[in-house]
Length: 150
Image 1 (cartoon, rainbow, N blue to C red):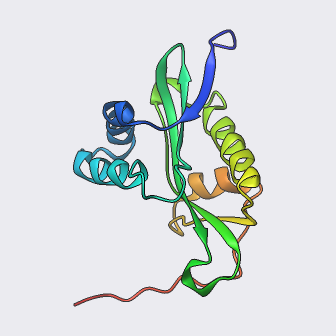
Image 2: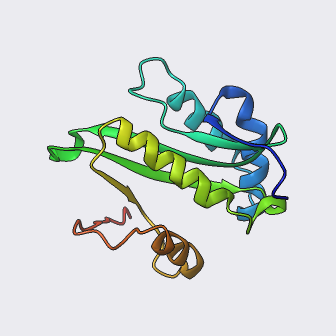
């Protein structure tokens, strides 16, 4: 697998089917509507910056990371970014694809002047928490608040 050509590039509309398939393999759900809306927002020319990227291996989408850059939103006076979705095709898992995607994402964020990158992980998703911990993420000093609408 080491000799396969890997290319990191900005996400584009043609990636929709591959992203939906990768997500369905992991989530066991078809979330096409969600990803159609997500790509529409990401690729909207009025959107600040398309921070989302994909990894291609031998011309096929092997993984993706979707995120956003915030320039002072939420009353936070610094440039920050979030990672809200990450996925790797099961055929390419455990081969460094997610780590390479995050490395590229972080290089892009540094170039964009981002100071901190945030993500949310369910408290009982130990595998994802361990992955982000290996990538030097640590618990934030910010508190995630929730309200249950009933």
